[in-house]
Image (cartoon, rainbow, N blue to C red; front, side):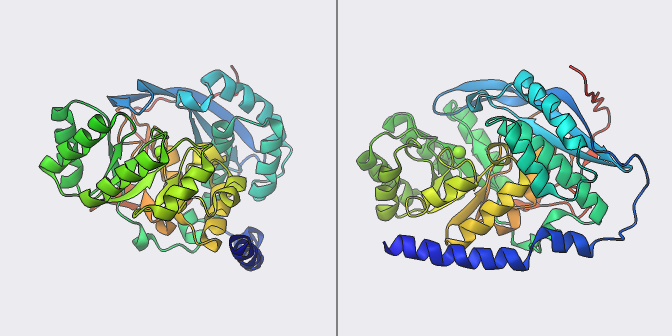
Length: 394
Ligand code: MG
């Protein structure tokens, strides 16, 4: 009961905060910003793309070397906003399903006379299908890039965030041979990052992974078990052991549906327990409250920045910890995630470094911390020779 009372009290505070800082007020104040002139119609186009990974990427249940992506762009009044749908296979979206969705979304988007009402536009985008979260995110991200450019500011500034508060970013060291793990861990530590380690196989394999890293560096480690531990007592034993190895966080230790077990673990764990697979959208945050220490927000799961910003507010009102994560993504989606980085305790935005054929650049990492671009919108610049062909056809 006390949890419920605390939730209601905090939810009330959130509503009050939302009333003070409504996006329409921000937009209203920005009227009159100078702009190039062009066709005043929201024109959506897309470009299929295959992200090639520098190293084969292995997590508890799978390995892969490429990730299908659909890049998008929305033009309006002489401005161009860029978006991205990144679709690792376990999310259930494909290049074809994303393009099918975008074809349906295109006429719906055109109904809007301008891009300002991102909330209403995204409600309509959401109503087209129940799934396609990454494809929806590609529209949301392009709209934010577009509207940020029209306002002349990056979103972290529009939202009033302090970019100097970005935490150390984590760099994932995947499951691999001892030699490769040592080499990658050394590289990550020398650049000032935290090291993120994917666990969730056997106890022997998991402990060997940590001990191998500890042979070469004392850098703080974040753990992602990707639902790999099936027994709460085993999970607690592992976490107690990890707490002696300079580990500062455990992400999704147990299967996402084992909510009561997650709560049991969070109550006893010496380290914060973060929900990733268990947390997809805004409505999940309330369900996870009291069971997890916090949430890992990923734009491809939650349909983009508009909903991510709402998840931030709700989690903050509930006193839950925040993390911003990513898939294997180009700099388009990473630049979008970087807008949220200043209010997170952990940032895990390394998807663009793990690919060899990135097509844009924007946010950077300095001394191990994300530095979101200060340029308007998402601050995206297309890389030379990118040769992207956007179309509204097949
Ligand atoms: Mg994860």
